[in-house]
Length: 181
Image 1: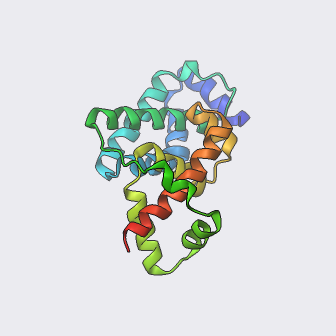
Image 2: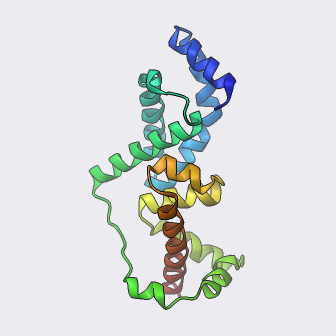
C-alpha cells in the first residue's frame, strides 16, 4: 500500500473529505474501464462507477491497508457490476467442455496473436459474447496487466483457479472467433 494513500485515508476519516477526490482522479478511469467491459454499456458503467466510489467512501473506515487501495476498489467495482448484472439476469454463453480438450495451445495462440483487422474484429465480437465476470478477468489480466496474485485477491479466488480460468478463456475466445468464419 502506498503510504501517501494511507495518509490521505487517515485525513479523510478525520474530516478532510475533499481529499477523496484524489482516489476519484487516480482510479476513476480504471474502475470505469473495468465496469464498462463487464456491463457493455457506458451509461450503466458511469452510474456503477459512481456507486462504487460511494460504497468505497461509505466503508472507508473498513479499509485495513492489507492490500493496495486499487485492489480494494477493484473488488468493490467488480462486485457492484456483478450485482447489477444479476438483477438484469444476463444470458451466459456456455461451451461444451469437450471442445476444450480438442484444441492445442499452439493453435489458440496463433489465432489470438494474429493482429490482422479481420482477426481483431472477430476477437472483439468474441469478447462481447463473454460473460461479465469473464470480461472482467480479461480486463484485469490483459488490459490492466494485473498479476494473477492480485486478481485472485480481488476476486477472492485461488491463484490456481484464476490461471485455469485464463487458460480456458483463451480457448473460449478462439472457439467463438471460429464461429464467426
